[in-house]
Length: 285
Length: 325
Image (cartoon, rainbow over all chains, first blue to last red; front, side, top):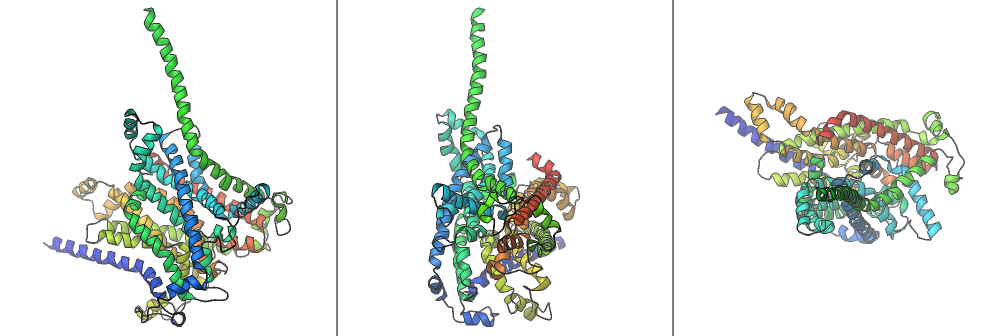
């Protein structure tokens, strides 16, 4: 009887602890959205209460007009989405090759894929910039300040980790399934498209969300490789709200919310696949 | 007698030949599949990295940049300047950055792993709203890191919400401290990083916990093992492969951390101070600020070598775990 009471107390106190952690973790995001609904004057005086006396929905309109935030948003969407498509395609091919074949050099390739993560970004920041200028000199193709330049760099950056994610997903699919499909008359490509791809959909979705989130997050290369607002991404544009000439914390916070909320929505829609896809790789190695 | 022999010998020859051909054909598909990635890696990783290494041996500054790889050869002067020449501008504050990066990486990595594991165990129980709690806890992980930097930089202000909670509501401290100036800065960069990183580790650990069969715990209970004993003899060993992989990625991410600190201080243009500067922010600022690309490349190369040593140590420690998979 006393152990049962004890167990019950423990169960409920652990639940309380869990929800306390949830509150603590979510609070900064709540705070960001809340601050975005105040006037700049209120923010500069300091906000400490939880209530929002006069929600400034106008901030969400002004943020697109004060600077050309829509252009940055569009650029980020185009670059990140294209990167996602390219990286996803490359990673599926390479990940499948690594998961199914043990070819001469496969170990070396697998190691160098992970090895690319060891190189500090700053090491090839300048070489890539100069390489881009060289490409323009030699072939007349502009690379700096272009969508495809950014997409090329980002795709190359995020493909290695994507290969790592999707490879372990392919490994977890039994080989027999593919072989029985081939006995039924499919060729290798058909077996791959009809059997393997549908089964690895959670992994592919997880990988795509991973690529999109990471590209959405990149700023060091965006700062150096783009110089005009026509191609610059959000992390470059968002800096304009608070800086030398302006101090618009209201717009900064509403921009931050605008940037975060779509990602949260996409994440919630894909959550089921995302978690299983991401952790399948992580757990099975 | 003759017939089967004749039939047999071409058969064996055939099977060897087809096996060889088939093998080649199969490899061809594999090579074809990795080819685009391989080309991308050459173009964006390997080729620029080699250039970076070459750069580290050149006298590369604002006067010689246009010559790029034809710039005057400097031997190991860049390395020497970096390590021993006190007056080299790139060296300014690099010692602080190195110390901060060491503290930051160790504290963030350990906190993220410990919090991740504890909360994963908390969520690995049956209670109403478990799915909602898990999803809500994952939220920080989807917040872009530049937003994390901007948002926490705002919250850390002297009259900001964090000081309000600590001083006016909880009365933990007597006076409102400066978080973005002085020694407190190291916490002002560690806490947001932990906030953003632990949820992912938690979800991975949670998935790992769910693969541990209940029988193991039942058997341990019958043998009279307490909770703590169960944790150290069952949970931890079973999670070791997962811990190994996440540990490696955490170390790499934290040593190379840039976004949060860069955005928190002057949106990438400010100096985070003696207790807030990290290797990546310091190197980026100084090499581009002083046009000292040779020395910057030398520093990156040394850093990469150091990371390879760390990975080597990691591999030695966890080798058996990784092989078992």
